[in-house]
Every structure is written in structure tokens, then in C-alpha cells.
Image (tube, rainbow, N blue to C red; front, side):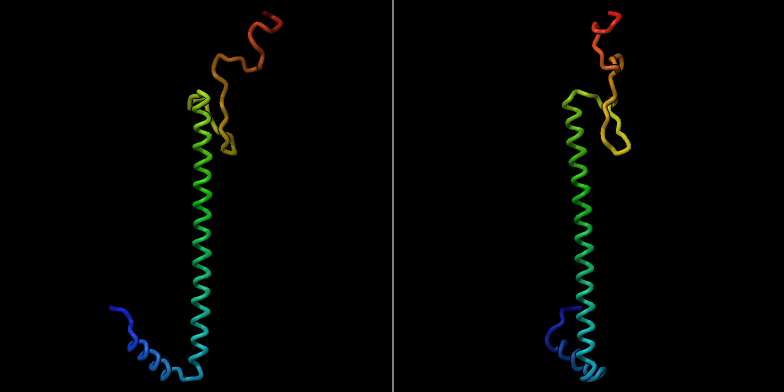
Length: 110
């Protein structure tokens, strides 16, 4: 199969003219043009949707990597970090620390 040259296109046009007649040919051309236009719009919409989804995924990955960098910079081990329902990292208190927020030596029993 090769490229269509001018003689082949003329042959196809003459054949279409003989089959469909001169009155039907413009109508068929308009229908083909509308179909191609609709196909282009649909394919562009699909391409745009895919690109938007890929951008969302890459943005989410960037945010996750930034959060991981913040956690590692804070000196917190991965075992001390969990995620809540929204996927936000939550740092668990270290074992042996005072969870009530009071400092040692400042309570009523010290």
C-alpha cells in the first residue's frame, strides 16, 4: 500500500460521482466533514482529560514526596508515622514520652 496520488484521487472522485450522483455528493461530503470534526473534538477532549489526570497524579506524588522529606528532616522514623483517613501523615508520640503535655519536674508530685 502506498500513498494516494492525484490520479488515484481523481479516480475515486469520478467513481463517487457515478455511484452517488451530482446531487448527493455535496451532502455526503458535509456528513463526512461533520463526522471528522466530531471525531477530532472527541479525541482532543480525551487527550485533555488524560493530561489533566496525569497532572493530578504527578502533583499528588510531589506533595507526598515533600511530606516524606519534611518527616525525614524532622528526625522521625518511618515507624513513628501513620496516615489518617485523608492520607495526611500523623506522627505518633515516641514511646516513653509524656503524652499529656506536662514536663517532668513540673507536676504536683515532683
